[in-house]
Structure formats: C-alpha cells, structure tokens
Length: 368
Ligand code: NAD
Ligand code: GLY
Image 1 (cartoon, protein in one colour):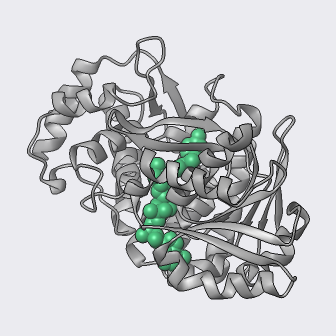
Image 2 (spheres, protein in one colour):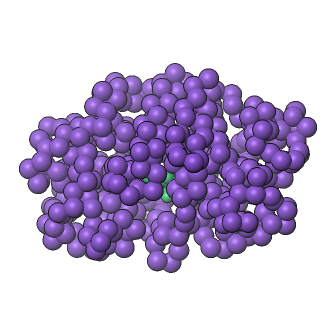
Image 3 (spheres, helix red, strand yellow):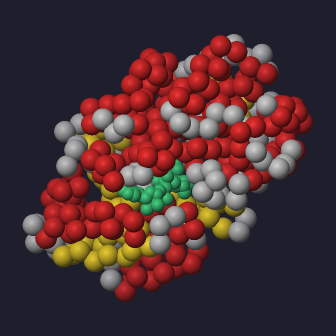
C-alpha cells in the first residue's frame, strides 16, 4: 500500500492509500483507540453509502462504533453544529488520546478536526476522506475550521490528524460533479510546481473523471505527496511556501461569496475558475505567455469545470468581487497576496498587486 509520510515536526503521521481501505478501517484505526469504542463523525449522505461497511470493519475487530451524523453540506461547518458535536463528544466521555474519526468530505474533516482541537484542549483525530477534494487536499495538512457570519473558514485551528486513510473506491459513490470539483485541486498541484504532472493531467484527467482506479490512485498519491512536502516545509503558512496551495483560491473565494456559497458554484469549481483567472491575470501583468494561460483554461474546460467568468452570468462588477477578496482570511499586513504564475508549474506569491487593476481586469473578464 502506498504510505506517504507527512513529516511535520512534533506531529508526523502517515497517509495510507489503498483500494478497499474503507472495509479495513477498523483494523487500521485500532492502534489509535484507547478502548474498544470508536467515535465516528459523518454526514447523512456518506452514512447512507458507507456506514454499514465501516461499522462491519470495526465490529470485525471487536470495536463498537458510535455515530454522530450531520446534515450534508457546507452549512454544517457552523457554530451550531460545532457546539452539538462538542457536546456529543463530551457526552461520550472522549479522552484526549482517543482518536475521533472524521468520515466524509472536507466539511466533515474541517468541522471534526476543529472540534478535536478544542475538546479537552486537543484530542487525536483520524481523517477518512471520501471526496476527491478531501483525499487530495483537505484531509492532509491540519487546517481545520468552521464558517461564521463574517466569512468562510475564519474560525479554526491548525491541528494535525494522527492518521489519514484514503480509499479510492470510496469515490465510487461520489456524484460526478463532486468528482470534477475535487479534480480541480489535482490540477492545482501541476500548476504550482510540477509541469510534468500537469501534462499527465492533460493526458489522463479524463480517466480520473471516469473514476478509472489506476488513474485515480496515481492522481491521489501524487497530489498527497505534493501536499505533504509543502506542509512539512511550512506547516502554519508562515514562510509563504504553504500559501502556494491557495492558487486559484483568492479569485475562487470571491466567486463563491458572490454566488452565496451555494450549489451555483461549489468550492472546487470556484478554485478551477480561480486558477484560470490567476493565469489570465498573470498574462495581463506580462508575467506569463497567453498560450500557457489558454492551455490551462482548455484543460479546465475539457474537465467539465468552469473556465469563463462570463459564463457564470454574475450581476456584479469587478470592484464587488475585489471587495469579497478583502474579506478573505488571506490578508497579510494589510495587503492581499495573490498567487500568480510565470508559467505552468511556476506559481509564486505576488505582494504588489494593485486592487484597482484587478478590478479592471475582472470587469473585462465579466464582459467576456
Ligand atoms: P463536502 O464535504 O460537502 O462533500 C461534498 C458532498 O459529497 C456532500 O454532499 C457529501 O455528503 C457528499 N459525499 C462525500 N463523500 C461521498 C461519497 N463517497 N459518496 C457519496 N457522496 C459523498 O465537500 P468537499 O468538497 O469534500 O469539501 C469542501 C470543504 O472543504 C469546504 O468547506 C472547504 O472550505 C474545505 N476545504 C478545506 C481544506 C483544508 O485544507 N482543510 C482544503 C480544501 C477545502
Ligand atoms: N488547502 C490549502 C492548505 O491546506 O493550505
């Protein structure tokens, strides 16, 4: 089984990737449990697809499972659901060394990880991600958060999991739109610093989107290895290295905010269009050639992801989108860093971006 170590000083852990792992979750988690009872947090849709199998795998190890099932969707990353989850964990008499298990997508992982970080001043937790987005990105690296009235992911903590179990077969039940959204984060790793992987995506992305097992496993392992390397270098996003993982997020976040964080544009779709805009803005700034930017846009579009701002049909102007960016958590010393590109695989942090210029650029993109 591919095992990717995440070498974070003081908190190292493994990411294990293997088809069928959901059926063996009990045996994998057993060394991380203090008693023969596992506390599992999931959402209703994931529970419908996977609860029985996961429960059986723990039962086979003589471990009882206790479940906290949340409503599916972004709205569960809330103060209200956090409070209910924390109360439930305390009622279960969770101990600090008990690993709480997050079974689900990024919503479940972010919420459970945050709860684990605050209950009894920090409990262990295990990520068992079931969306492609969570498998290639959110389950690794220890960013946990909820959303508040002030914005998305503004309240949270860095809290590393003790183990990440990735079963590519978990994607068999994932709706195609969610698979495509997760694929945007796969493309991201190629664009950050791995042009050969971007070429692999151009050649094999269709297989990933058809849920071909070998292609999915390769895409997941390559993405996790890239993320593990970056977070080990800069766990808390202090040196700028980890900030590279935000490629596409500043533009994407503004679009998600403008569409009300709704089904009109889900997170990975916002990231996909955000990466295209980052590439086109890099061309606008004379940093990158137009062919590279259009190559990125072509692959995003060929993957069934949004590649044109005009097609979103937003009723706003560039200034409003820039205003959304200013409420993003990525402000640094009063400035907004942007992830721009000098070419495919040459992403860097630009701290000299003029927001009026971004606004003008977005006005042009909104017109098409
Ligand atoms: P999600 O958790 O809402 O899952 C998407 C949908 O897929 C949900 O309806 C869920 O019920 C369903 N689902 C999950 N697994 C399934 C399966 N195997 N079969 C059938 N249905 C399944 O969304 P997501 O895209 O996984 O995560 C998005 C969240 O992740 C956002 O809140 C975002 O902020 C966060 N995120 C966090 C990080 C991080 O580093 N912590 C990184 C990227 C994104
Ligand atoms: N998804 C961005 C990060 O983990 O830093």
